[in-house]
Image (cartoon, rainbow, N blue to C red):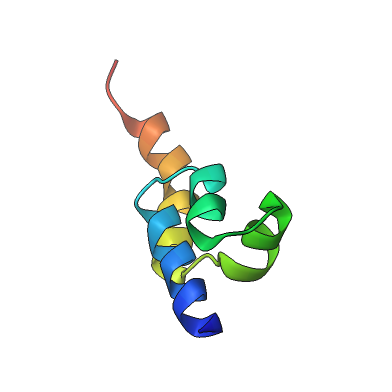
Length: 61
């Protein structure tokens, strides 16, 4: 069950679902439980986040 909750939280975060919504879906009383234990950042998401500032700076006005 833990792995299913972990995967659900991670996929919902990647889709842009707000943390408090995910916490409610998983039945957590505290956002920290969801953020610290169940939601992880996958490598592809991390790469996207790291390249976003570069892409923003290269855009034409």
